Amino acid sequence: MRTLLLEIWEGLIIALRAIRVNKMRAMLTTLGIIIGIVSVTAMATVINGIEKDFDEDMEELGTDVIYIEKWPWVGGPGMKWWEYINRPEITADLAEVIDERSRFAQAAVPVVNTRRTVRFEGSTLSSITVNGVSAEYPRVHVVNLDRGYFFTDIDNRSGRSVAIIGAGLADELFPIQEPLGKQIRVSGQRFQVIGVLERKGSSADSPDSADQQLFIPIEAFKRVFGMERRGVSVQVKVGNPELITAASDEITGILRVARGLDAFEDNDFEINEQQSLREQLAPVKGAIYAIGIFLTALALVVGGIGVMNIMFVSVKERTREIGIRKAVGAKRRTILIQFLIEAIIICCLGGLVGMLFALPIAGAIRMILPAFIDMGTVLIAFFICIAVGVFFGLMPAWTAAKAEPIQALRYE
Image (tube, rainbow, N blue to C red; front, side, top):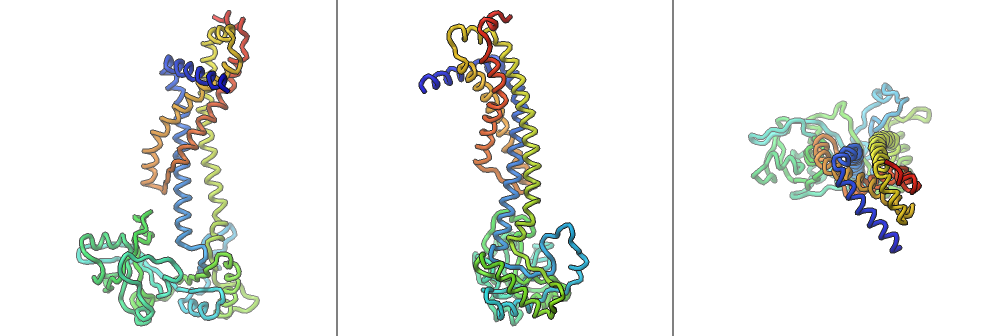
């Protein structure tokens, strides 16, 4: 072990000396690796960001929540849209039917939304999502209030004009004032702010983020905006994700009876839930990953071929040195380790420069797409550099290691 460590140390010193002598060549050689590592990091950053954003969206949907809607979330290649569009709308009263008859449902809430202009004094925000929900909403979804309270069943049944606003709306409408108790105008109608949601943080600038939405009682929504031809989503909290399938079957039966369907008629509603969405989107995610892996692998192969080419040149140039070392007792293993270390160092230098370029690129990507870079991505990038150095440096190193001392000494 001591001999091996000494050989590695000696190989490291010789490799660094060789790279220092040929700085320009080493720098040009690393260009392919730099491009490969930037590609790897950028692709991993985008994929991690998409994955993280997708998981956050799935958490908001809830693993134990069933969504009864007119349309399926994801349509397959054989989707007949004309059949879905002719379905009758989902109505808010189905939430009460499910609450009364379902053994698995802990709570059911109707949700309807529209996009409207929201104003307060001189501030005007356009295309804000206004959600009409019942007082049962916090029993179905986690609602964390920064201050204030969520409206009660009495508020809902009486159709009071009250609203709970997201943290982003509070910042934009009330930059220096306390929002609670203030009257905002939603499409010209007055609503009193009674609560402010805790800040979600990620993707808060998105118009679909909870930070940029407001919630009002569904009866007030019906009075102000109307419910005709509006798509209502009835959302049911099951409580235990393992009971989702059983609850879906039970709720399907309840809805068929409530909507007057006979045994020969197809369902005129869709039951959506997170797991089925994950399964339907899995092939899309797999295709994205496959394309990303192929593109990054292609860039690394090109960079690796460049490293192999330069290492063969280096072996040819130092053939006489190899002969002298072998003549004084150097083993094949020693020569092999020396050139392998040189290839690995070149690749790691390229990886280091590539990471320095990748970090600002990841920041630029984050401004357009969801992107996330972590220490694991950095470690994977350097592991790839070592692997590329070993793989593409092995053949030149073996060529140097098996050179005959006499022939190498005669080489001019």
